Length: 120
Image 1 (tube, rainbow, N blue to C red):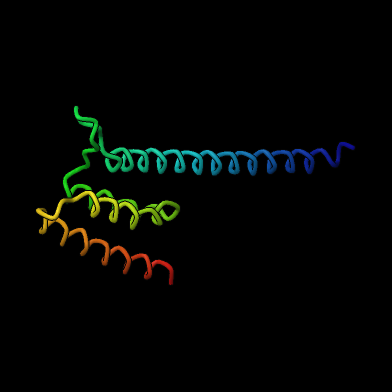
Image 2 (tube, one colour; image 1 turned 90 degrees about the vertical axis):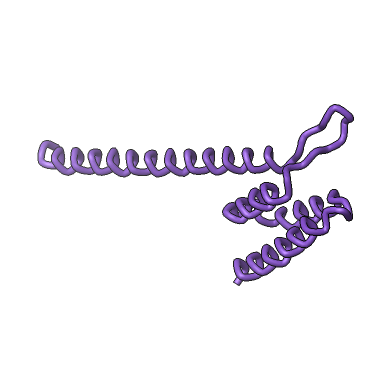
């Protein structure tokens, strides 16, 4: 029995090391998911708009809104909502904001191109 003791000790040490590495990787993955979710939450918080005193939805100014939508493309699991968000912004703009409408349409075209490139 004593001649197997070094082998048993070595196996236990290796198993302890493998378990420690596995726990470290698991912890890092969880931390990365948490940070991704926090970043996503900040972006959505910026995009969702706020109610003003007349209980009307007030969205971010066009360029800030578009910038936040572009940030969504960094999150593969959430990128699919970028086009609906841009379309929502487009619908909420009045006809008087012709310049912003043009920029939103350009952003929609660009995001569609990026999404098709990402699929390939």
